[in-house]
Image (tube, rainbow, N blue to C red):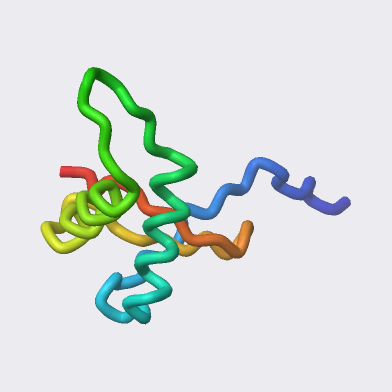
Amino acid sequence: MTSPQRTDYHEEGVEVPYEQINPDTLRNLVGEFVTREWEESGEVSYTLDQKIEQVLRQLREGKAKVVFDAASESCNIVPCRS
């Protein structure tokens, strides 16, 4: 008798140090992230460059990290847990 295959497996991902990512690639990754994930709320509106700089600052300050998910072969930016 064989054991059933797990279909609910989810890989958390591997952290990729942002410093090791080519600066142009990192900027493109962050730009794609903010256009996909950023929701404007309130009366303040930010330009794309301002949004990118905010996320880059969060990466530098350790408040966010770049994660590669092998299952989907994609990168994402996620907040760091305190």
